Amino acid sequence: MATIDELKFGNDLKPNRQPAILQRRHKLIARIWEQIQLLKSQEKRSEFVVNKLKTVKDVNGISRRMHMPKRLKPWWFTNIDGKVCVSIKYGSKCLELKPGKTVIHVQNTQELLSVLELISVSVASGELDELIERASNALKMNFQSDLSRDGIHSKQEKDSHKDTT
Image 1 (tube, rainbow, N blue to C red):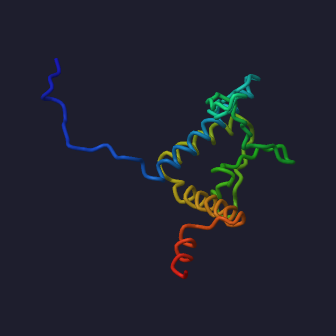
Image 2 (image 1 turned 60 degrees about the horizontal axis):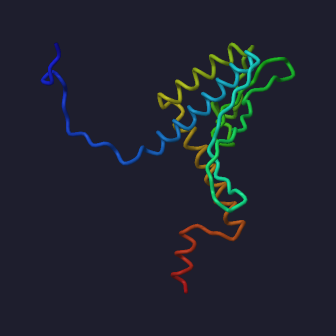
Image 3 (image 1 turned 120 degrees about the vertical axis):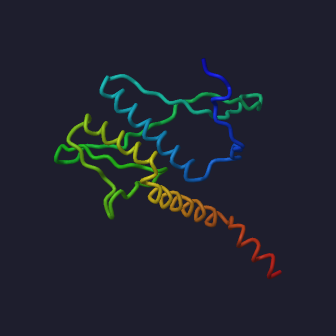
């Protein structure tokens, strides 16, 4: 019978939050899982629905959180030659898995399933961290340019404007 003396003890503290790269990995792994489930459901000719929480105001102006179906678009398509092509997306950006190449060619949907699972394992092991980081930074840059187009500037610009006045 096991006793408490056989356990290993330590003084480790739980981190307040995960590092950004781990959050990004988990986000991409979740999206790949959704694609795998979408592919499996299409093969079975069934429907796959992922729900998201959305805050909606009713007629009285009271906000309520509701489960709404999330719109899923498949990352794969069939090219002119009849081969299935898939691109791995982080947000709206396609990851460039090889220099200049964003699409993986496969013969059929069974091979597509194994490729998606392989990519998921690669993301979990950290092999694609640099690509995820680049895509994340590109998305941030697009967001910042949208804000500046709307007349909202970065904190640095606001601080430098305060210094000159």
